[in-house]
Image (cartoon, rainbow, N blue to C red; front, top):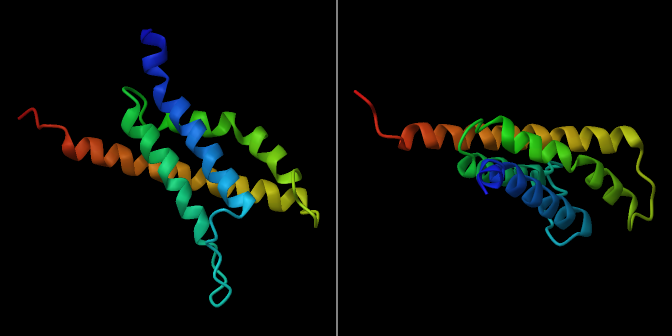
Length: 122
C-alpha cells in the first residue's frame, strides 16, 4: 500500500496529462485564437504537473514529470487517431516536448506552493 502512495503523484500526473492532451486533440477545448496566433492550450499542461507535485510526498518535481513521460507514447499514438490531414513527426514531437516543459513548470509551481505553505522550522 505504501508503494502506491509514493507513486500517486506520477499516476495522477499521467492521467491528467492524457486527459488534457485528449481534450485538446478531440477539439473539446478550443484555445487557439486566430487573431493573435498563440496556442494558449499548452498552458493547460500546467495542471498535471501542479496536481502531481502537490500529491507527491518526495521528489515533487521528478514524479509528475516521470508520469507525463510515461504516457507520451500514448499521446503520440493519439495524434494519428482521427486526424484527416497528416501532421509531420517533427511537429508532433515538438508539441509533446512543449507539453512536457509546461508540465515541469507546473511541477515547479506546485513545489513552490508546498515550500511556502510548509511551516518554518526556525
